[in-house]
Amino acid sequence: MRYTVDVIVDMQNDFVTGALGTPEARAIAAPLAQEAERAAREGHLLVFTQDTHEANYLSTREGRALPVPHCLRGSEGHDLVPELKKVAEADLPACPGRLWVEKPTFGAAGLPQAVYDFVSRRGGDVARFRIYGVCTDICVISNAMLLRAFYPEAPIEILSGLCAGVTPESHRTALQAMRACQFDVLD
Image 1 (spheres, rainbow, N blue to C red):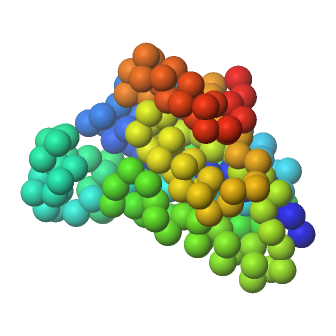
Image 2 (image 1 turned 60 degrees about the vertical axis):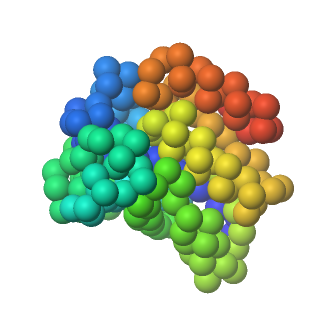
C-alpha cells in the first residue's frame, strides 16, 4: 500500500492560544482540524509532532535564546488544541494510524524513522507527504527539510493556508524558502 502521510506540526495550545500564540495560529486551528479529519476519512496516516520541553527549558540553548517557557511536558500548553485533539481521538476507521512524535527542538529527529517503521511494517511505502501547522518559519520548515533528506523522491506538499508563522512576514519568507527547496507549496 502507498500511504499519504499528513504531518501536523505542533498544533499545541501554547502555540495557538498560550505563551507563543498568535492571531494567525488561532485563525487556522478550526480549518486545520477539519482538514485533518477529512484526510483521516480518506485514509491518510496522521502524524502529530509535539514540541516537548522539560522543567529545565530555560537552561537549554533554545530556552536561553527564547526565554518563554512553553510546551512543558504534562502542561495544558503541551496538549493539542481541542479541535485537533477531537480528531486525534476520534474513531475514524479509514485512517490507517495516528502517530505522535515528541521533539525537544525545531525538527523532530525521530519523524522520518517513525513514518518508515509504520509503513514498512505494513509492507508499504510513502506516496506523498502533506505538511501543515505552526510555526511555518521554524518547525514546519525544519520538519519539511528532515523529510526531504530522508525521502528525497517523495512529493512533499506544504498546505500554506493551514500554516502560521511567528509573523505574517516570516510565514511568507519560509514559504518562499520551501519553494526554492522544491517543496510543492499549495494555497
